Image 1 (cartoon, rainbow, N blue to C red):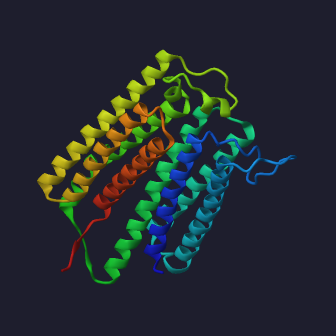
Image 2 (cartoon, helix red, strand yellow):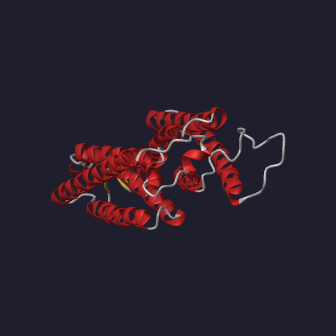
Image 3 (cartoon, helix red, strand yellow):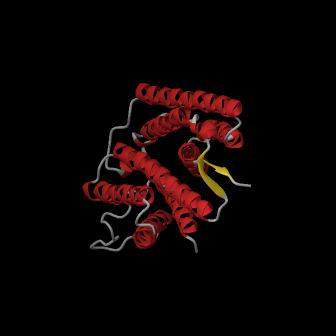
Length: 301
């Protein structure tokens, strides 16, 4: 296995972990294990689907830790002079540690559901860092194989500001969606409160607050659409990343359909999980686009 293959594998595992986290939220299983990191109690815990998902989630977190440490050791041994790779990996490791420790605090302190918004936003940042790490590693490999020149593609570089706007709009949209979901507002629209009760909360958001947070979520989604269209227009003019821009717009359209379906099905687990997975994919592609604008090199052939 080459280093950039390991980096992309780690990135994919992060995506899988994010999907598992979405399933746990849908199953109201975040606190099904009252202890952390192990699921040990004084009495037996019934083996349910929720418990299985939670334990798989924790196992994948352990696997992810092993992969990231493996990456860092490989970097120190073979790429110690590549500061960009080293620092990106270190930041990724720090983000992972924040994710693990914060998740543990949520369980041990029985924090309210809205506390998980930090988890959601940090998971997007972590995914973005490892997308950039994998992109850095692949560029380094391709340059060593004489596939890319050392000269930057200046046309692609001009897309950096609008790529940042696209990425920032995506983070804002994800954060707004997380607030809508983790405050219990999404369930409150249908008179349900199982998620917040799983976090030992007894008072759901009011219907007015729930509609306000839904409106905020929709407004940030519109902001993302505008940013994506703007990026596509700029990409078309520069004839760079045009296919990727079109792909992002297609993903956002699918995401909008899934958002409507989530409400129409009263937050059916499969639908909301795919909705969250699509959000992660959009952010992964947006991070890749942003990374490309910084790292793009002209092909030699």
